[in-house]
Length: 318
Length: 321
Image 1 (cartoon, rainbow over the protein chains, first blue to last red):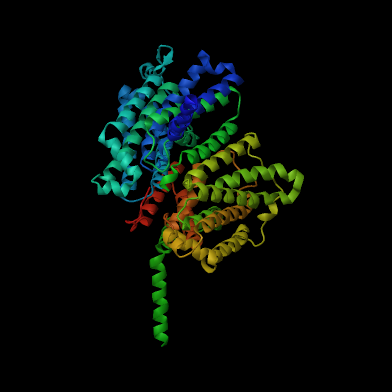
Image 2: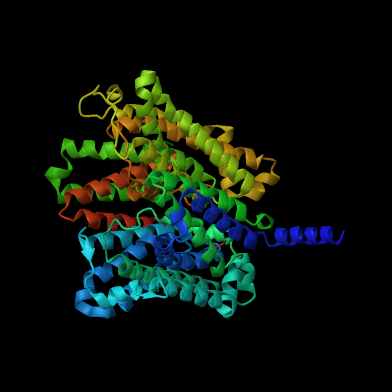
């Protein structure tokens, strides 16, 4: 009898914490499936691949998380990441390591422009960032002229590829930034404002929150994270051209919703995106290790994106 | 009496221009480019190219501009074109000319799927269609094996009938007229405008909002399906296996330039005509100029932003996400 009771409370708890439990179960499923298909998945070599593929990705996804938490969408993430990476590649020999703040600053400026368009000029965020991403992509192409840019500066590359305890440094950057952004979301008043706007923008503005300013800050924060992700991408890969990250948008978005941040806004958080990024990038890497073609990966990720965004949608708020 | 009538015609004309500032913009750009590059811009080849690009934009934008009336953003059109094209290539040896019917079928299925999922789960349409577009692209590159595959059986669609005028125009005009008829002179169109301008009000007025929203997506899918038959041959009888952001964005720019607001409620296919014309004139003019092609892409991005900022004017009360 007691056992039965315990069991039913467990089910109750699972139901009420659906968005926390589901990602963990999915991660376990992903690990079990790919481990049984191909045992390399969790061996040393496989582990490094998994860590490399998720690190810069997680940072970019964190920027998107804040935007989605607010109930908006940011399409420009991939383009800003690309722009930041290419700026690093272009000017590393001229400015040395000072190129990092430069690249991040450029991305923050772009974030400010899309935030301004969205908050002040009332352009829907999806379209505003779509326009911004066209502009950023154009600038990236103009600056790089389509060349492949290689990084030879070893102190820059060491940012990402130094091994600490058997794991590359880029992973620690990602985890650190994830922790910091979780703190931002749950401890600072700024985070509470973002949640409040995502829950109900009108109510938030009536209770004295400066909605427009917070929206601009969130898009600037998103640009900031994209800048960092671009820098670390370049440091990790050691080179890149305008073609980089061409099909990253859907995986990024899928990782945000897979973690449990609902598209309706007001729910979720950066710590959830950590799980989401693990689900998506490990699925991607696992398929790659088993020789699936890019087309097949994209199909699986696209279907996952649709299913997960439906599953995490908060039904009560529609 | 006659004088009065003349005056009213003049006033009507001014009213139309005020409602559609894009017509003025179109003529302004046309005149500017004609003066700047008289010989190149007014050559038959360039005018044909403008018409050709207009057809491309218009056909892609036809379905989405119907969906835009109810305030949603349908991005699946490029996906239908790509996946349909590759299925046509696969089926042509088996079914011959009938394989082209894959396009309307795929459009119908996609539209029904989007409408069903959206009305059941309320997932934002642009996310759903974006994911669907990427899924279709993945399927395309999987099925094609990574190469663009060409079919030459459908050359008759674009074969010359009258010199100097692209034949595709003759196929496009009935489609456009049908779309305008549907939106302006039938019950469906009126209901869709009502839903777009105020969904709650439409519901209270007794319109079955869910049914008509779903119908909008189905109609959009069918129109995209029919358009892609023409587009398939118009764009070379094959489809690319790489997803190009420009192909996706340009029809959207045309719709917004034409004056259909993203929040819905007004506009529609008839406004998109001038949007597409203006957009093709601008891009052709820029292409003739000495600018670098990349700069043109930049210009288009800025154009999109400006057009939307202008069209977003006066929506103070609307909740924007």
